[in-house]
Every structure is written in structure tokens, then in C-alpha cells.
Length: 235
Ligand code: GDP
Image 1 (cartoon, rainbow, N blue to C red):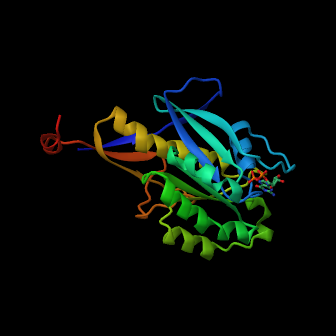
Image 2 (image 1 turned 30 degrees about the vertical axis):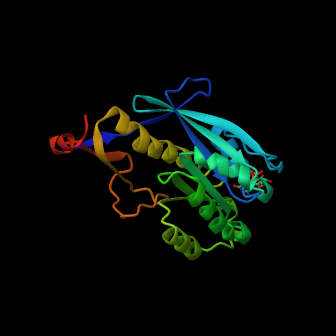
């Protein structure tokens, strides 16, 4: 039996308690804007000063998604080679990763293959990866082409790509909301409803789907467990 579920996302104050905590790790080369994306997404603040993250920074953002209170814990990593072995431990328990490069920095894009390799080796199989091309506001300085990005997305089966600007705020809220939506679909819906299949359709251009089925941005289709499945289970 199929059912349609509308997903409503409301941002909540930081002091709100949550029922679900989802760890998200943000990785990428130093200077691509990882801390700035978090600062923009969490506090709506942007500063031009560059202060390298020395080790890890931890912040969070709370949401109400339908009736569930969800916290995304954001772990900002320094992105330096010397800490790679430590960062690996962070992937292990992460359910989501923001893999960030800067559209005006080809080295930051070229390093993505390294990071993808690290993630594959160290994280759980169903980790959700968001590829993020930051500094969209300086389009005239773009050196990473759309073709290169598309090739990377296809080669690595990336489902979600956002171009953001922490400087102007463009697409940062969308990135966060899509993150909480995907975490809700993957980890909360199966707990609150007895489902065996959840699929999401979207019309959002920033949102890449493997099967290219694009229908409605806020609608998930859920397939409830049927009797046949129950007969085969051990309950
Ligand atoms: P991190 O090392 O990856 O955490 O990078 P930061 O967040 O510290 O940002 C590095 C530098 O890039 C800082 O000077 C930021 O002000 C700048 N920056 C970050 N995001 C953007 C953006 O979207 N647009 C522009 N023009 N500059 C940005």
C-alpha cells in the first residue's frame, strides 16, 4: 500500500531539546568555507576574517520535521592532512557528510577524490553525502566547471549537490533543510511507521536524484510493510 506524506520543516531555537541527534561531519580543504557555511546556517552570520579551524568545532541546529524534533550536530574539521587519521574516527559514527570545495579553487575540487576514498573506507554504507560547491557569489572567479562537477557526481554516485554562498547566504538554508529532510526520511520515518520503502521526489534544481524522478519537493512516497513481508520476518 502506498501513502503520501507531506514534510514540513520548521527551524527551532538552539536551546530546544531534541528526540533525534544526527551527526554530520563537514570536510574539505582549508579555506573552502566550511566554518562559514556552518556559521551562516546556524547563526546567519558571515565574517570575512579567515580563522583556521585548529582541530574540531562542534555546533548544532534544531528542527521540527512534522512531529519530530531533530538536531543536526555539525562537526567542522580542520581538513589538514596531519589530522586525517583522527578525522576518520569522526566518519565512523556520522550519518551525513558535507563534502565541500570552493568553485574558485581547483585544488580543493581535485582533493575530493581523496576524501571520497577516505569516506568509503571509514564510514557506514548508508551515509548521506552532500557535495557542496561554495563561494557561488564569486562566479566570475569560477575555475571548476559544471562538466567537471557532473562527471564527479556520476563517477561517485553522489545524489545531492548544492552550490552555496556563505557570504550571501544563498542556498545555505536549503542545504540544511535538505539534510534534515533526508535524515528524517532515512532514519525517522522507518521508526515511526512500519515501512519497507521510502522514496523522495523533488523539483529543486539543486537536488540531484539518481533516478531523475522529479515530482514534488515536499512529498515522500512511502510503501507500508505488507502481510507477505511480515510472514517472512521473525516477529
Ligand atoms: P574553512 O577553513 O573551510 O573553514 O574556511 P572558512 O569558513 O574559514 O573561510 C575561509 C575564507 O573564505 C574566509 O576568509 C571566508 O570569509 C571566505 N569565505 C567563506 N565562504 C565564502 C563565500 O561563500 N564567498 C566568499 N566570497 N568568501 C567566502
